[in-house]
Image (cartoon, rainbow, N blue to C red; front, side):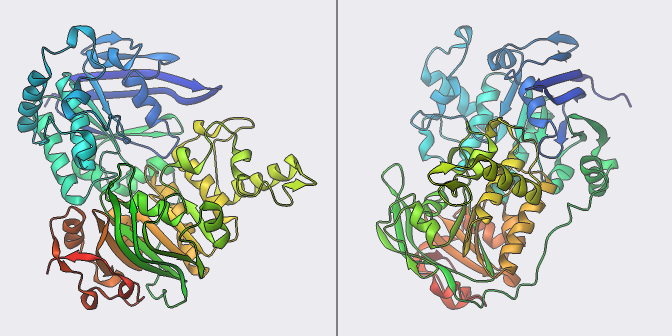
Length: 534
């Protein structure tokens, strides 16, 4: 049987930054009506290839052809007009604009619609056709993360995209939302469109793609038909014969130590002036990992900021290792024993315009050996940075290079290295492996397990339900600013958690049954929130 014609062909594509090749003579082809998985570890060149295809970067060498005709994109608008659209992991939407306004934002002059009402009608038709239901007149800030992703996809469909690139599309989705997303993707490919799926989730990639292309260190490692391949084979192509992707595990016997983080009835207001954290109580003990699952946008970020001293508490108390930090700032939280790995690596965790050694000294520049008689000791800072780079396997750094040019996995390992190098009693880690390849994610999980085994407490926030369940002694579920469920590691119910994450099993009239939710670690006994329907 003759395979479908190639819709997109890439030949010998090369792109360098600061003299270092991000992709080197890469070949790639995409056929009509297929889902093509693009895999590779962090820094393998996936983002660079997708950025070239979407018109964000111009290649140094090589060619891109659509329907057999070579194209050259000077901007994302050029790519859009050629039928190529990309949905980024971090959405590019204006919160105060409506769905329809966001969809037409940035259109070329000849693409401008007759009226916003006409846009809303067209969007509604597309939403029905592809099963991407969303209110075209709703402002973005009112939408869930899953709905915002649908807006991004509808934006590309509205512009006539035949080739859709999805960058880590399920990173912030609950299981039920993931199923709905791939139902929509299946509708697209049934109509002859083609989808490039960039994902680090092996099971997801194997389940939904037709073919796979693997990049390794900026070069082609091979292409496979998904049904004729296996996860171990794909992992070997990505990482070689490394054993670094074995899943970290531990015995769920911890959590009997003293509390190192206690929240009692904590409430806080979000940036929009509305309650974002609503009467949250929890306890993290020494030797325990507590995981918080939930779809992004349900108060997790605000709760993290409350704990880290970055957001004011309007009710309740925050205790870190026996120190009342309720009214304190980040400096006091750190001094009390908090290590903090934020979800926004470059915006909060690091200073993107500074080199790595400066970033590694951000919490210790005023202490010996990094300062002496009021003068920074650059040699000592460089020595500390080198030690941490080697210990945490941070790659891709060059002297004087700003950290914003490093890959996501290496940024995450750099933040972990800095935070864990400081004296601390509890680690707060938000989305610790989001966007990381399997090896980098496993390295991060290994450090979290080391923290637990070193008799420290760990509080992990993640939208990756599998990760939360795998890593945690206790799993808490957060929805609309509340803790609506608590599960001991050995009593986890994935379906139940998925329903709680999306609000499908939450009843605001009934209080949480603490006896039913009680865990061996006693964390659940400290809960004072409402929420689970029996």
